[in-house]
Length: 300
Length: 300
Figure 1 (cartoon, each protein chain N blue to C red):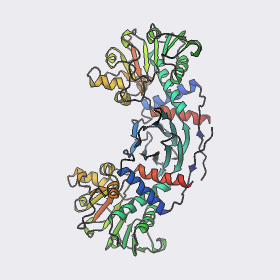
Figure 2: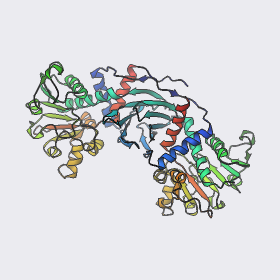
Figure 3: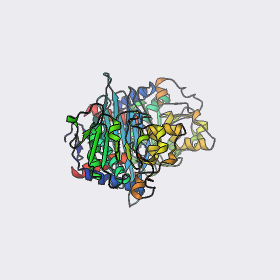
């Protein structure tokens, strides 16, 4: 009864460039059929709540992240996430880690990767909608891929005193988005938070929304007027609320997705046309969890 | 960066009666909708091989067993299994354990539970086909649920010197099975190992087969002349090789399954009719892995 596998808890500090490199490598492996990315599964718990399992495998490791959503008597919910990494050379565990903070980082880094692929090189004005940990992580990673000279942030509760350094707080989402080259939607809203119709051609909007079924941060009807990309074609079109709803209503279909991150990195999908705003939606993938857990292992 | 969760490796000794009780409780929870049992998932690895994930949840814990099958250059395969238990009260890990030996025990105990439910109380003659760890575990658990006065065992390589105590070695599977009340098929064969047509009415045959697609230990055509039960209705009929093949050929259908372990324990399916041999097939379930890991946790 002994172990040699590391168990990592808490919030590890990972360099943003390392996380971006790890994710870029993982999505490139997926593009080259050197990785496996099955759909996430949801297990409904008999007492209420659920556990989402995110699996993935690369050339030498398999990972599963389990994320329980546990409603409590006081109306709140406990949400945790743990990743188990297993070597596909030896079959032995490599790492069990608290994936709560890692999930925030991999989600933000994935959006930043998309910004790097989709936004024009000179993009200078950034808008961030939301001000929680996900929004702050998005800001951190976005600043690595572009030199933003203007950053505006909006959330209903945000004050100037509480804003990150170098960030202007606006009184509305519209004010934050006006004139922006890149808009990062980082809310837990399940309803549209900006009006996509007001966006300029070439503006890149990223959206993560929440795991709630059919949740969305832009109006489903707006998809038809956007160049739409996603993190991974098979999962995003089946899961993203605005895509599911738009497809049901006949307003848009999965075939209109211009590309996903593996395709963007491999250069096998068209870049944005330049005549419409650009929308990138991620729902989160096991391969992102695997990539950051690998990074943690390499550093532990 | 610390941990308080136990990691258990190696082969723990669990009392057979405790394992049987734990499985009986878990299958009863499943019967009462107090447990969740999603289908297993198979992730094909980019370099060959796969990882099967077995998930389940009961009232206060969620478990996932990951079992990699990793072909090696010498033609052999590395097979391991690890179970992660997470509390559905706190969302925190409870245990990470080596599930290799536990898988053998839960598989054998599940067959023994079925024998307890399906075999006549006075069943006295036992036949075991196979002589590896799974066969020996089956023998151990079967002896807990019935007082067998005669035990015959057959495998091509088995000698009397290598046989378990109190066991007669036969020269063929037919000789072992002749006159048996209970027949435990514990082989890694992917083809029929006994002729089900020669069985007496009321004889109970259990079969575990292997994870290989379409693997089976009895002829698919034999199902039509047997009272057929399984470990869990939704998964066994979709996965067991002989059931899948028989259904494809129109020889049998899932609707002919008389019952499963949750139904047998709850008394909501018909018992064997007594006029035909009885066949019980298990493919293995996450809830079994969860139950034995819980037991290990309680004792660690």
